[in-house]
Image 1: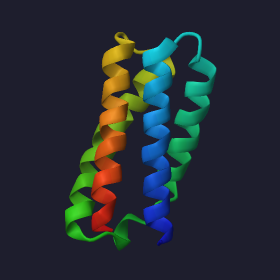
Image 2 (image 1 turned 180 degrees about the vertical axis):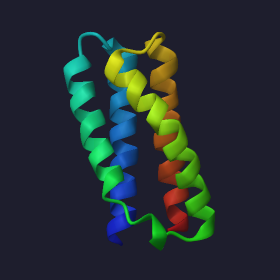
Image 3 (image 1 turned 180 degrees about the horizontal axis):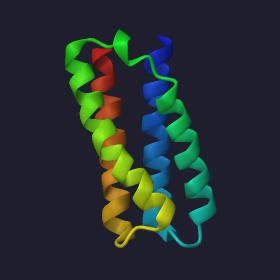
Image 4 (image 1 turned 90 degrees about the horizontal axis):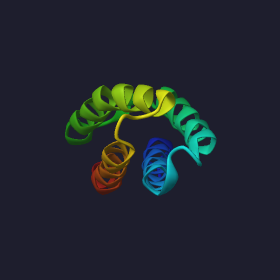
Length: 102
């Protein structure tokens, strides 16, 4: 498995974990959620996006555009934690599925 593919799968797993924790009890698990958001953001920063082919590159661009807002909302505290959690898990699932294109 390539380094970038493994990072994408790690990011996807983190998004699903974060989403599950937020859906369970955002306020009670806020510190853990913030730690995983920070770790996920670090993974994203280390991606070599120039090495991705077009089908996945388009997905990554779309994800990165949405992630900035999700990251900010997650660190501040989402207005609707269930809705925010679902968005995180949806992106986790999308990245997992689309990683086959890497």
